[in-house]
Length: 97
Length: 361
Image (cartoon, rainbow over all chains, first blue to last red):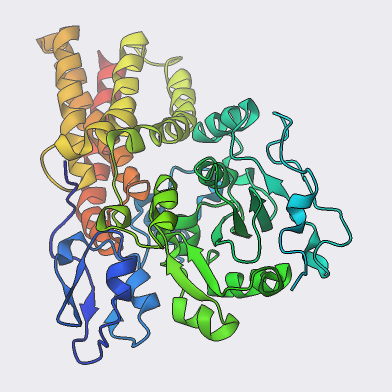
């Protein structure tokens, strides 16, 4: 059974102009968000994006942007409480990541 | 480059002792590698009892942040200068699940210092990252040990690593391997080709179940504080909290930490908090019904619990977003902006009703 999370939230943007068609994004994406069509990357299913940032980090042409972060509620709560950026810091022994 | 390409294998240093598993089985022969990389521990591809018990312990959240091995280079089988180099994290659970899939292979494993955190999480934090790879390659003298210039990284390390940067700085090209360690053999045998299936993260019921003990243990720890407060309250109230209340609460905790993660894709809706709330509501309704609390005398109690317990399950289920493999940061923020205020209000209302009931009845 397929897992589905909230729709229309992902901040993933791909610049068609900059894309050099190397296919790295399709290689690193753990959810098959990208497909390669005629030597260009295309965002196939944006709603599957979990904003891990692998594609952006590995794009040699800087054609991809995404606000990557941890999709982890306890990290966000810790961030709210301590006034810091939510980080996936599990050293407290929380069930995070 | 060493003359004797497979020097380590000239000594009989294979791991024969069943308890050795990870002990240093170093190549001590001076004629080995001329540089400081001589000493490469050869590791077994079999897990021993200690490894298995260790994995159970960390799955329960005991010493989870201190289950690590030394970063550096390790050998599997009898690797030589042309053998593939796999890169991984120094969380021992990660290392064990990798090496047990490598039986019959001859390869190198380059272990990065990820502070004892698994590949994916470490990549998210950046400790499994470009800098650490560059640094570890130079520290281990990898370029002297292998003649090729190719690293196989786990695909889930990609959020922390910039492949083209690694190549620029070290000359090593990066190939992202499969997501799961048990596909590595096929991956290597097929000439470093990963299928779409190998590239996709799954989150099966087993994957989810194995994560739930940590959730349950951490929820149990926080619950101790609540039990303490209730114990004190019981000294003053007219209707003390008892076994039934304990069961009702525990059921809500188990619903949020175990049942919801287990049934995750089957529960209607998308937000984790919603899924947890829904199951929590079912549990609470069921329990109240069975306890006969839907009578006029216990109505306040019943309504109080209907406010509190589903919110507890919802909160715990929401925290499972951090363990899941498919929730995005933006999504979690959106979910929380709605769910957290509702949980707080619901809990406060419920607790007030329960207290009124306990003091006045």
